[in-house]
Length: 358
Length: 138
Image 1 (cartoon, helix red, strand yellow):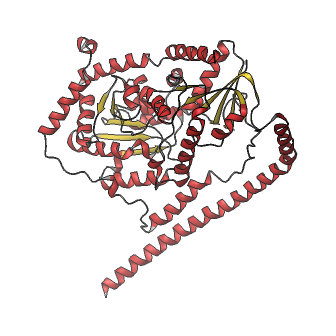
Image 2: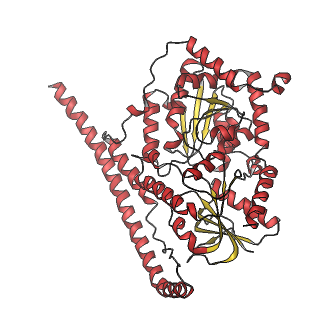
Image 3: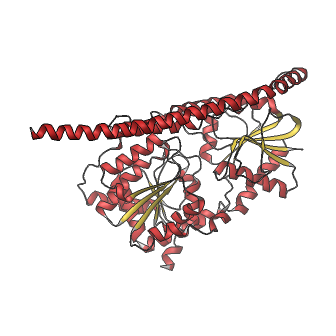
């Protein structure tokens, strides 16, 4: 039996690509012959990581095709013709409404993605969802096949690498409280609500503070500009930092600098940065939406509204109340264990047993 | 502190406390809404910058790759499609490369144009300010 993982794009450093590579490792460890194919293969990846999908796939009936669904692509419609026993790992597609006014192409791509997911609803034998939230979405789109939840495999050992010393020196030890959010600058992540909460925090609780919004704004330049204009209007532009597209070691430095991680996202299929913050021992304040409460568990303060004064007070409480901070960090440590390599590997192997029996 | 760290944590109770504290600490100013920040409003140099951004947004699509053909249908139909695709691929690939190169040339022209527009906009703004100053001095 040959196992093929298929993605639209496999690139260096994104969660879906990392998940596919980690799954390939586990399959190989367990004696399964397996390969990764993608429409677009990032040439920064080690040679042999994945093959370019050139002319489709032709699998025999006993082969297994694991399709990573996360975007709008013709692949969603071509998939049934590739043969084999087909299963999907659903990573979620952002609703197109978030991109309206910022990027027409992204908006159309997301619409195309949802059309693709609905097309595949009666064609998959089995699905794996990163979260129960994603599972519910598949059900709402008409999927009736068995769906198991298995979190994304995260290479936590990568986060123990050396952080960027220049970034650390620039912002460390100056007495400022650093608030952090890590994630693509994208309208569904509601960076404006983080900026608003920061405005209230620095005004009411702690003027000696800064907000770092680390993430690539590629394709969302209009949104990024609007955010900068908003920070300017609120008079906090000098302390809201948009590093843009930064290297991995600089992201590590941002986590090491952070005193509180703030997430106001309204749409996440899993939210890897929450686990990253937990790994670095940064307490979390997050808005209750989509898969965020599920991933967070009891490992952070959850906001039920976007009231910026409440968000600011929650941030201040975590920054100053050492007893609460210790409790939250302990809860985060426990929650993080649920996503350890060993734990997720076990869940994935159970899913593979299910796949074999299809 | 070690004892506190081990007791189960009641997040809801803590959030209730925080909400009560905030309620008691009011009133609070109205924070300007994000919706009040215009999205596309031209504002002199900002207009030129918007042009550069729009060009940058579309720059990712200049490369023309080979199409991914659909090999569906019966075994013989699929074989026929595959043979036809292989036959025309040798013509398609260099064509796609030439189109990509042309697209990059046009992209560079657009980016250069955006730079010229941005500089001219700056000159216009400077001249406008000088005119206003001169008219005030009359």
